[in-house]
Each structure stands twice: as C-alpha cells, then as structure tokens.
Length: 165
Image (cartoon, rainbow, N blue to C red; front, side, top):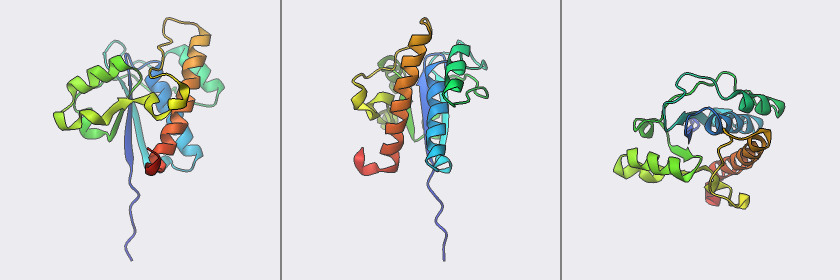
C-alpha cells in the first residue's frame, strides 16, 4: 500500500522592509497552522520589497507585542523579495497594494496572479491593505497585529478548504 505524502503549500508574506508586517504575518500564520495541527502542511517565509534591513530582526515593537500574544518572532531575519521567489513559493501575499504592484512587476508573466493581497482572504476586515505601523505607536502595532491574526485565520481556512476560496 502506497503512503500518500501530504502536500506542502509554500506561502510567502511580503511588506516593505520585512521588519514589521510580513514577519508578523509569518509568525502568526505559522502559529495558527501549528495550533490547528497543520504545521507540516505549510512552508512559511517572509520578505521585503526593499533591502533596507537585510539580516536584521523584526522591529522590537512588533516582537514585543507579538510575544505578549504568544507569537515568537525572535528567530526571523529580514531578506529581500526577488523574482526567484516565484519558483520557491505557491502563494505570495502582499501586505498592501504597493507591494503587490512591485511583486507583479517582478513576476514571470504566467505567475503574476499568484501574488495576491493578504487581506483578500479576510474580506470581513473591510480593508485591502494592512497599515504600516513603523512610524506609529503601540496602537498602530496592535491594529496591524489584529488584522494579521484575522487574516491568518481566514487564509488557513481558505487553504485547508479550497472550495471556500
């Protein structure tokens, strides 16, 4: 009897510098998938459209708030999004429309549609873009984390129940 190997979905979250929104989404989605007993079904990473913070950990404010809610971002390090990511990921999720535009511009023509807005999976949030908290205060980071939590749960639901996409 053959054993069926579970399919792994490779998901990349993308923001500007890969220190606030996208590493938070990576950490939250990884946690949500693990809580559902589905960690082995996903390979998750994050990147930035710009190389401002290459090799740096996520913003300390994002790390602290995430940790308060049970998400550990401490091992993550910033990297830059490249066209090669289309070969390595099944789904490439932009935190806002500006990122999506850059990502699609770098995409091989047949792959551009695999880049989507993260919050398109959570229409109940009522917005398309996850706001950048970088120049804000703790409330801005909390709002961003709230949206990412809702978006991550909706994304997981869509990925495990493809008929609901």
